[in-house]
Amino acid sequence: MRKNLQDRERTTVQLGLVGLGKMGGNMRERIRRAGHEVVGYDRNPDVTDADSLADLVGRLAAPRVVWVMVPAGDITRQTIKELGDLLDEGDLVIDGGNSRYTDDAVNAEALAAKGIGYVDAGVSGGVWGLDNGYGLMVGGDAEHVGRAMPIFDALRPEGPREEGFAHAGKVGAGHFAKMVHNGIEYGLMQAYAEGFELLEASKLVEDVPATIKAWQRGTVVRSWLLDLLVRALDSDPELDDLRGHVEDSGEGRWTVEEAINHAVPAPVISAALFARFASRQDDSPAMRAVAALRNQFGGHAVQKAGPSSGSGSTQG
Image (cartoon, rainbow, N blue to C red; front, side, top):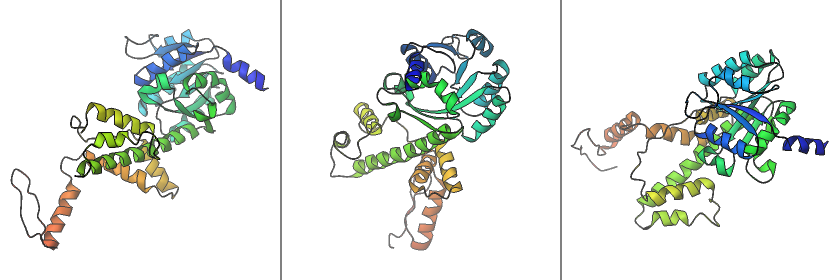
């Protein structure tokens, strides 16, 4: 049995890949480097292999496997719906975007009515995945996951499979796992960022980039995220070229919502998410209210809007 599984994994397979942006384009190249055939479709005529979704499906031999790698939400839902009308019984759809896990059961049910399989795949690796590989968390029936294993093996990092791939559970488990992964990422990034700011504020530490770089080996806080922070500081030691405005792509919010739904304390991830909200406010209404209250009860100094600043008692 094990030998048959290994033989299947070494077999060259064909994949349709929808979405050839920053991640999708690199994924196509990595899968091709592993010796598999990839037919890609993208609205950008400069990168696409097929003229349309219908053309992509027509270029694939049945039974087909099509991986969807487009922005989460309506675009993904519409793409999967259209594929459901184009594919045949026995085909398989993989959603590798950052879809909310609640969409997966709906997609799987709609496709199953037509005899089409469905797997959800959480993919981590960003623009570095082409060379480093991608961490994969997938959900779905074992039969469908096994069928796509040659593709998963091509995408994951070198080394033991279990250190870069997990069949997390049934449909929805892959995207749920990726959601939590990204929530953790929020907290880690916020901790590094706050440490950076505290070092910058100190008059004792004279070389902040060198201090952070010294954490890269031997310390308990070393990580790839730390390496990326060091890389950023190498090119801009005080990060003066950047605005402190940080968007969120949804997974952090969903993680906090699920923590509430399951009564799981998640103060670090929640605080990291709210810090991102605060970063988008040039002048925080909440902080204006705090300043006003401090001025009212203690006469603390406030700064007026505009070039002048207010004054008041500094007692209390």
